[in-house]
Length: 361
Image (cartoon, rainbow, N blue to C red; front, side, top):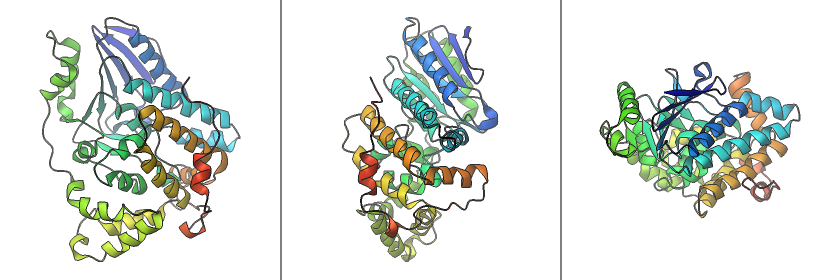
């Protein structure tokens, strides 16, 4: 085993043919900032040129989760201080790292154990082999903070079955391991207690089995996803052309006795939408549908980069949402505007036309 010096919050090691990148910030559930993302990108660059490496494992430390996302408190502070360049750098490094994982020349295995949300999805969701455990809780929670799913999340959401992508994006609903596999955010379910054995197998294998075959030795079948039973009303409501139409249909479906006793229901979805930023909802709905037409992950990341910089440079809701959810924690954001009906007719067009530099060279 060799160890390479890097940011203390990102451990980089090599075990024979396995490269391992471990997020080591358990006190913040693995939340990543720009230096951490640079360290991850640097580790990937090193492994890419190492002819010994045939697999890369990305995992985390701590009992609570793999990665809760980007360090949004730092992001808010940068925007409030006028350091838009700092926010731009964060997103550029993050999205390029997401693309590097997806395009890596050897298989990347990711353990999305525990909390894996936002930026954590960007690190785990584009790996070749994505493992969840009974503790996994995955989400793209950006609309909670007046923002839009990024880190390639729009690409994954756009390819979920039916209208599951719109549902997960607009409501910020959390997925359990069965949901994550059903929605296309994960591939295999492995008990947390078996993750060590999977690591050992990846480190010490003496046969030519590939990482997928090794993980399959520990793979179990989770219970059926609750999203399967909810697909009927989700596909019905979230096919609406606009957020207002989706709200209206959810209100109608909430009166249907078939769905009233379910934890995941039209009423709970409607309640979630009523708490979200109208601007974030309108842009997010358009982003998911646009991503369905895009050719690849890079194109989705480029689209997301344009949208997030529009939010960072021109919109108050992201800063306000982070304040309400993560700083003051009063859970009472004051959105501007506060109602769908008050959105400017061209708000989506302006977001998609926002000028930015090229993300990829």
